Length: 200
Image (cartoon, rainbow, N blue to C red; front, top):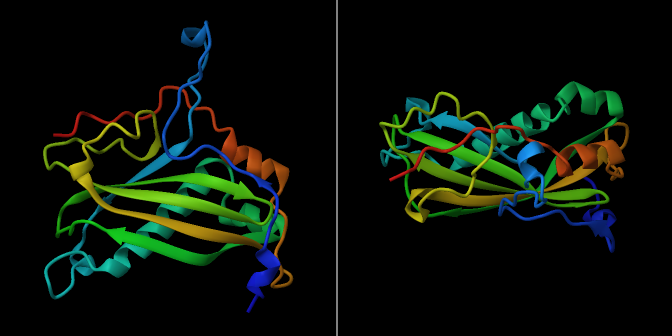
């Protein structure tokens, strides 16, 4: 196992938190809107996700966190193959989940994720899981969200975060985050991103 002390850092650049912010400029109407890139993926609670109590098992959220994180990375050009070609990958150091409400079979959930902080050899990724009304057309919800904070707090099923460590594929030692990887996550420009309908 990797010695966690090797991940200790005294420097690194933090990026914005999960509150989306539009670029402010006099000619913003002519420029792409730039905000903290929040990526979203639609989930439907399947039969296999449900436990003996009739709701989605808590372990499912860990799987969903990984799935939406991988999809987010691929969407900005960093697929699993690109990490392997580069010679370093992300590994989980810590998951933290706060469960607020139960999810049930057949329900539609929107999983949101964004990078809260990027350091030299680690990053902190955050997540939100929202219950969607049954009558909402969520077919186009996979992608970057333009109005990711536009929802009632009562829709939140769970919030979570993962501390990821960047390690070399050749050795179990930490690797420095490549500048091009940092830039891809921190400077995503979204034009006409997917928008939420008003959730009731």
